[in-house]
Length: 345
Image 1: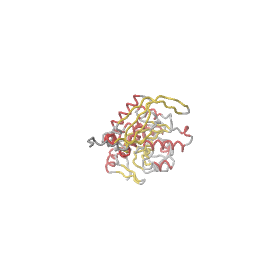
Image 2 (image 1 turned 90 degrees about the vertical axis):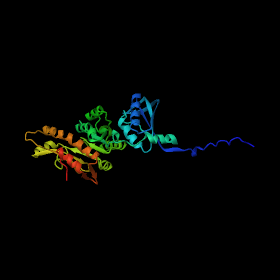
Image 3 (image 1 turned 30 degrees about the vertical axis):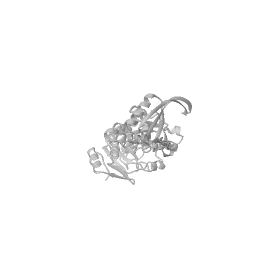
Image 4 (image 1 turned 60 degrees about the vertical axis):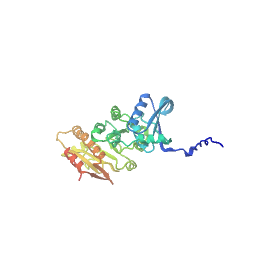
């Protein structure tokens, strides 16, 4: 009689419990300080379970016509399939590269590790900045309205995810970087055509996936396909009391027309030029002694108040776009009136 215990059966790999919702996100950074900063942010904001920093790798690539080889560090970010869009957006915002490589690889975690990762990747609490509605700003020049949007983001309850320009030399690029904002330039000269430039901007916006796209002195007429792609999210500020004086050189035109009032308009972008539904306006009196430059400066000071307030009201859902129609809540009407803004009925 054999009293020895039966041999232990080894389960087949197919029968082992596992988690199929895992994703490992790979990216490279230039330094240990960048790796530590990104890892800390992603873990603190509960976008991943952990981040592993791999020993230096060497990357060879062509950038701006030159082939170069550089040492980098690779990050392995353990997260979930559901969190992947948020991880990608946040990485773009905090990455030191203008064009970071972000590669998502499906991963089959072990059951216990998979449950731990899913538990670590928790829904955002309301006081975490990353959960605020995100704004991407398109700008071509000085970007004073863009800087005003950046300055007011915490007070108004939105988050500026990126500033995108069609001009690599635009002052707003330097100014936004100084504020710690992710910047991307897709110059028209490098892109070859306006169509190609807007294709590249659209690609960047799809990666960032902002809730709102704010046009702050963006000196291009958007192609119809671009407007359709981001319909309901494109918000522009224009320096006139639309429908008066669409297009350029509005201050001179207002003075030459003998207008007694001038101002600025924030509106939803449609396929026309400054023809979309009006969201809010601010009006100031014209002075007979005004030059176009003096009038522009006075209007601009009011633009810096109006635009952040409108973007904040949209972020708070006090103002919404429904089927190319603007719906304004009682709270927004009361708040706008208190600030002297004009809202359509």
